[in-house]
View 1 (cartoon, helix red, strand yellow):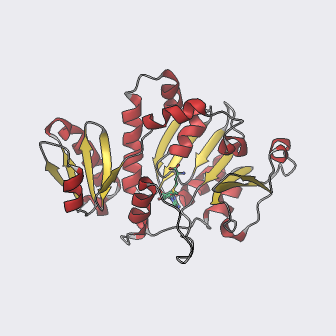
View 2 (cartoon, protein in one colour):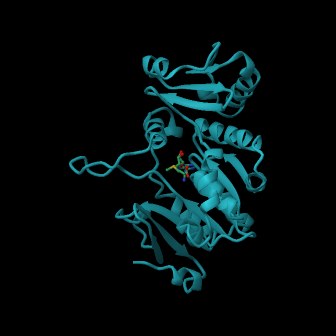
Length: 283
Ligand SMILES: C[S@@+](CC[C@H](N)C(=O)[O-])C[C@H]1O[C@@H](n2cnc3c(N)ncnc32)[C@H](O)[C@@H]1O
């Protein structure tokens, strides 16, 4: 896999390369640093559709099938400025406060975690795919260059961990320091005879990456095993599901928050009569 960089981003690309050597050597052995004078154009990406990483002035990108993407945390700012604890279902479900300690055990591109941190929570983003973990770490570096004060405060409440959440949750259960575990695992596509909703470019690339059968790290994980582990760690576990999907692991939630396309399922270990949860129930 090529890691394409510009002359002026050679040093940053080298740091990424070194990170792969130290943390994901099976990927590092196929990684080749390639210097180019310009970032690849859309046409060049279409002509070279295989998976590659690009480090340009805007940071680290993942490119495949003629498309490229990166977690765009700065691009989320307009949405973040409109977001509030009352108007964001995720924030209501997680009962975000300035003292909440949340584990996002399926971090992906970190957009949900950023929203939770923006609204005041301390969020640990756990991601098991090395490419996504590298993209997340770089997203934090890129966002830290922005001048927005509130964004900087949110970033200070976010830490990215490259790990399998199964192991991370088992360790966290011993420490007993987590208020909420949030899970947003990939879900199987709807049957093909039904019309498929348009999937955002980022999600298409994510789905492609995770479906590549390359070692255990990128086999699609529907997340069922995570729910019982999460319930051991925190009194509150929130799971994002497509609106009409079966509950994760077949375990019925205590409460559901319904959105247009998705819903949040809540599992409460010791607080089944949680009053905030009850106010929000829409079944
Ligand atoms: C649908 S994405 C999450 C999207 C995320 N909520 C966001 O806002 O961008 C699911 C992510 O969970 C990760 N994942 C799945 N199982 C995992 C596990 N056992 N441990 C850590 N990460 C996992 C996948 O690699 C994928 O990146």
